[in-house]
Image 1 (cartoon, rainbow, N blue to C red):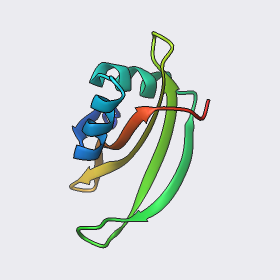
Image 2: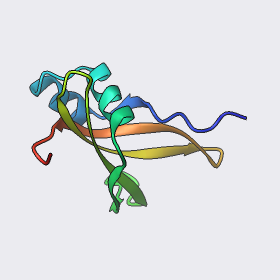
Image 3: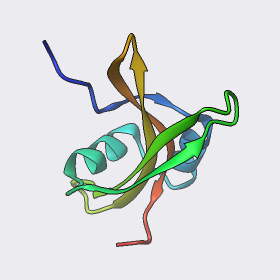
Image 4: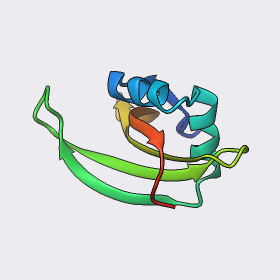
Length: 96
């Protein structure tokens, strides 16, 4: 059985806007996530729609072109299995 798919398959409007503002493509974001040495931070947040608590992840990585990218996201579950990563925020990083 295959493991979870970690590449983002869903992009929140905020993430899409930030990517557009920072001239980032989906490929830039994928590269940064794949090249990230670790998950920088994990925290709990309340979903504004459902009010349920959700675990969020901050991943900071670098693209093959040397662009530092900071992403925030969550892993969605379907039928109890982790199925894909949702990008909530994605922009050029100033933290590195």
